[in-house]
Image (cartoon, rainbow, N blue to C red; front, side, top):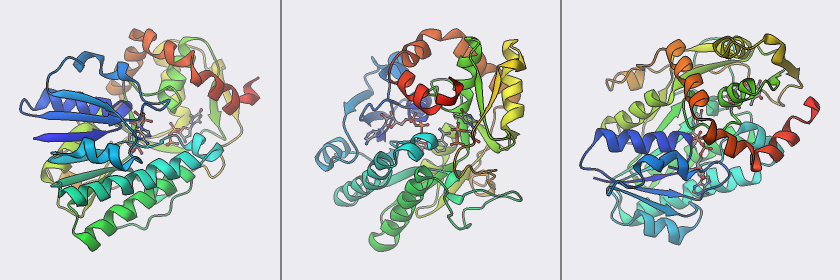
Length: 333
Ligand code: NAD
Ligand code: TYD
């Protein structure tokens, strides 16, 4: 099987490439990635020499690059996206280009080349926020941020390609992922690395927003299940079943690192900040998948990963990240 993964140099994509190469011997993986600020070839250093793996630098909005990368592929999994909500609020353009138009470029190539399977990696954020209950795959899409609106736009295009052209598409919508190799702009790696350095942990608003945490290894297993067993034209929610308030998460990170709660700083809330995400995952469970990583153990393992790999994140934090951080968190002074 020849698999094209886009965005494979990012957090989830790199974990997925590693997961698939470990799990299947007879697999070839092509990783098409533009290497934006979030793309990092160091995430895949350990498999660079694997003869079954090939990296191609390219943009999913570039039709010629996409056509060339997809030639001969049996399946495509699209992770490539602009992914950070706060960056989408300060500058939505790249989100619309990559997340919407890039998905369209891929769908066109899949159609032209008659590729057998296309999995769109989406997010539970397309459903918007709910204070009660949980969203199923049939729930309305009601995105709040330019990021989630772009992802919802992509989902609608994917589903339209199924109805109109009978394209062999599937969608996964996962909750918030955590684990190693996550860019330190998302809350867990940002707070772990700030705490290690005794820097402030900027909690938005009252800190009582709720996210459902899914270990990245569990997401990889879920995506693999959908890729192999999912029904064409269907979307699948993938969640960890671990709803945690941001403040409780922050306190646990500080505790695991033996740091003081005095590092917590309440800062101005994110505009349009979704209060709570929650998804019903019965549909993917019916494919035989279930999360295997206990949240407490997974968080401990993740804290250890950042403690043990300071070279990885210190290099990031000395680059573009610093400028972004100073702009985003100006009120920290
Ligand atoms: P990430 O920001 O860590 O990585 C994104 C990758 O995409 C990077 O390697 C980047 O270089 C690449 N990329 C960006 N624009 C590109 C373009 N135009 N062409 C080619 N490559 C491009 O993202 P992530 O957290 O690994 O998320 C991966 C996917 O999963 C995204 O589609 C995201 O919407 C979705 N998702 C993420 C989470 C999460 O918690 N991180 C949760 C649900 C869904
Ligand atoms: P984030 O990791 O950006 O993921 P998402 O917005 O896609 O869910 O944020 C997770 C939660 O943490 C969200 O409720 C916003 C909050 N948050 C903070 O309180 N402070 C921060 O510095 C960041 C980055 C996030």
